[in-house]
Length: 203
Image (spheres, one colour):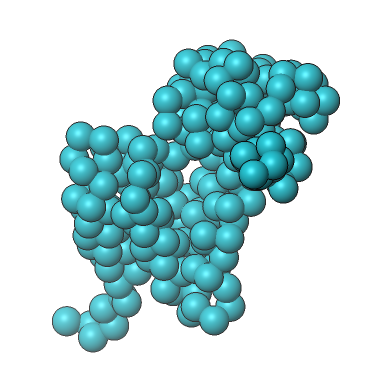
């Protein structure tokens, strides 16, 4: 038997992709600051030189992963925001999409929320990106509530956002399934009351 047959098969994925995939899983599971680049390289099966060739710093790697998370979130909520969903139904569709995220195996929190907790400096690039994504979510919910015909769309949108953020934060101790169900139930009741058709009977 030749020596070549004993060699482990080479991972065909580019080093940059292996680094990003390993870092994404490690950062999410055990924390960004708790994970060093040495561990990322070990899991990725690459070298620090390859890592820094693709990403000039750990912060740049973190930012790339958070941008990827933003793109994934956009896909998650795309159906709820589509024209196929009646405007009046979109706020609840958005919340239900968030509840399905909560139910995903391995969910341990919103990546943006976790990044905000890890980077207290509001000028840090990762923190600025996460803050911007959270503000965009706020404006999105406000817009959805306005399009649904809510009288106080900004207040309703902010309330839905707080319900969503609360469910994400409570999932570790409530359990993902219970947090998701509580989020849906609270949002359904809130929206049913806020978007109720006015009484025109005159009674």
